[in-house]
Image 1 (cartoon, helix red, strand yellow):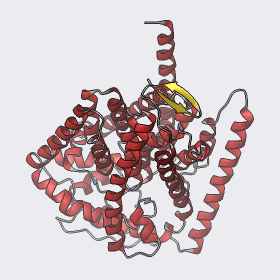
Image 2 (image 1 turned 60 degrees about the vertical axis):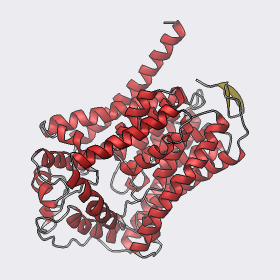
Image 3 (image 1 turned 90 degrees about the vertical axis):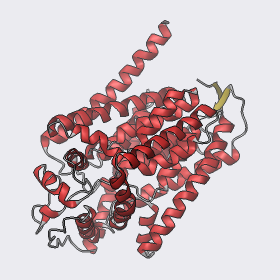
Image 4 (image 1 turned 90 degrees about the horizontal axis):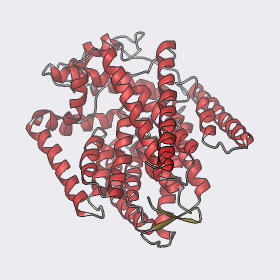
Length: 489
């Protein structure tokens, strides 16, 4: 191994290790200081669904999750009448619950340490892969964007954000390297987030080499076969009952960022908003493939096909929370390397990565802007860092003040009694009640933060379309990054 290669490995280990240490320290502090009632709330639901699956019970029913989630204190709603009947649903297909069924064989404390450590390690590994794949972007910028996008919402709640994020990055790089094994394995992991897996699978059907196309067809067929053979009844229930019920329950969610929620906030009827959102999702995937394929061809970057299509599909998904936005980050970072309005695209990356909608519930929310400033570190100019931090912190405080004002003008939280649902009722039956109460008090208050994210998404969509339309053609051996031709690889 050459000296230069050794230095590269050392720099990569230092970068990834620093991110692991930072994210681990944050999670440990949140757990020890008990500053966050929502810590691991989704992981507890996934664990209970896995426990139900191990016991042969239906993991989608309220009755199957209630006792387990109450024991783990998944929701801190003890002042609600009948709050013990409210459970957090698990809107994953049954085949995606298999990893959680394995984790549920362990005590919860051990399982959550392993699960959180896996997500942190995967997120750091993905950041290092992006640092190598996008050399024109600085390591602080990539690191700050990844941590902000994955940690405060996804890893904090216990979502598979780090695992899926790595799978998306690695799937794109597998297409770039024409690696058949990577084309098979990584898309299967993305199935943990079904709405993200669909655009990723669709994009790989148009990969520039035949092996990747056949590989993704084989993976999709295998997942469908396992779902039908091993989980036939649950798979049918998931498609026929769970998905519609979850869509209805989340339409008015104060933290939803999906297009149907934006339509509902604008006054569109619920069923019409959901129908328009589903149609728009399919159109966005088809258009995303066209745009991404053009970018990949004109920049000689095959990974753009996967990353940009997944970005567009994620933004247009009919179900989108802050924790899923990290799936759009690889495509957004790639757009930052192109010549079409890089400064505006860079700002949109922060708009996408920072969980603005969490500012009200996370008291340390303004710290997001301070950490984002680290991404703008340029030696020897700490003045730039301080100015970005000051502006970002002021913007965060402005959003918080505006949200608090809107909530005060709306009306306060008014819990309602939640009766025990029938034995065959889905978890969404009680979850919808909790969302309705929260939304009545906070829907207007979270609107300013959601508008920031929506604006960032629109900028990224515009940047992708402009890149596909205006980028000149380049040879297969070089790609232009901010006006400079550099070799690929």
